[in-house]
Length: 211
Image (cartoon, rainbow, N blue to C red; front, side, top):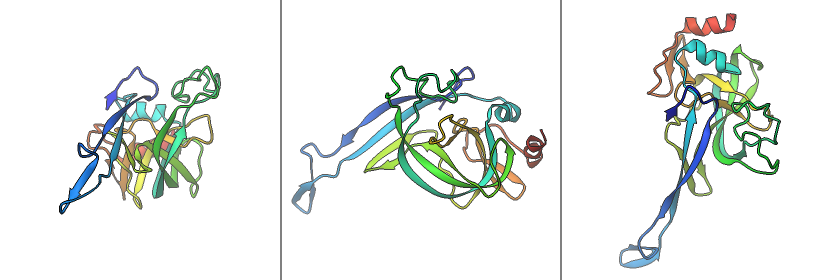
């Protein structure tokens, strides 16, 4: 993942890996020739803001919650907004307000249903279920990959630092896939992503609630 402190939102660049099959489009099994199963992989590349402290991470978040991941689905989401509706803020308008309001910015996401247990900052309620999206997933036989995305663990408690779109139909997003998600086991917090160099204690998390 490219982390850029001057970038306020994810800038998505799409590349398509070639379909793989045998040279003649067929595979062999016991001397019999059968059509080969083509597997496509689409790789997303993204740039995200980076944070040098838990304090700067929390200040950037629209919503900080603790919650249990209960389920997930994979679907296409159009993250573009009509011109002007993002208020000029690229963090809330990843599409940067397309000149043509009908222009799409459609990507494949895994969308998690998260049952909120605690709210440390922002607008949500304990007991509420919110949607949180991460780039990638398998849809219609095509695998969509963002190399720094680490899936959430269903049934586990997570602490999430989220950005919120001004479009209510677009799920919440992590501020970045490396630094914005923690697993919570009792009072222990550990980063979901192995490259997250921002350790967090339960005391620091409690301080976020008191601000």
